[in-house]
Image: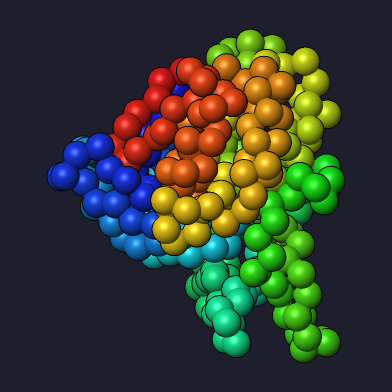
Length: 284
């Protein structure tokens, strides 16, 4: 099994694009998959530059309906018009972000769901992409462990008033890279808005006793400026300790983790944590 970072906020060389987004190319059991698509078509361009078969994708998994993760879906689907798109059903509810007195949509609207109705596989809490590759949602909601960024909200069509973001579009991938599932799993998230600690508790309950080989994704400790953090250092420390206590062998942080957030994680996790830049590959 191989995971290649197509794009994120950094790149390992100047021949690759970078952007405030995330996209991963996954080679698993003879098939190719995309996890998130970045904010633009640059993930596709990077795949071409790395000579990856981006026109031979079996399915696309969108961790949540935020543009940094879904914005490049059009370019992927032009090359793979028959590919399946996995997304939680809650993603049909529009999410907005506060920007002072204004609000702006953060994801794909109704047109996306209409255009790709034949490709979409909308699941509620759990779905199987193929044997050994599963999608799940958070089942543990300790408010203290949820990401403290409260700038996101939804607006119900019935009441026409804002409601707190309830993570109903967010999910994560669980992949078993070895023949025996008992040998370990890989957890891949987008932004861990629910909180890494809550998701790890969900993993512990659903996959009791199975070691975590790696946790991969952004942890939403930074906003548009990766040198700053959008939450307290204590929150980052708590999430890092949860990762350490989970026994995860490796943590590959990227995207919205931010540089300052990564440094704080590094103080707790040491040699267990690495930054995953655009163009880097992992093998399991």
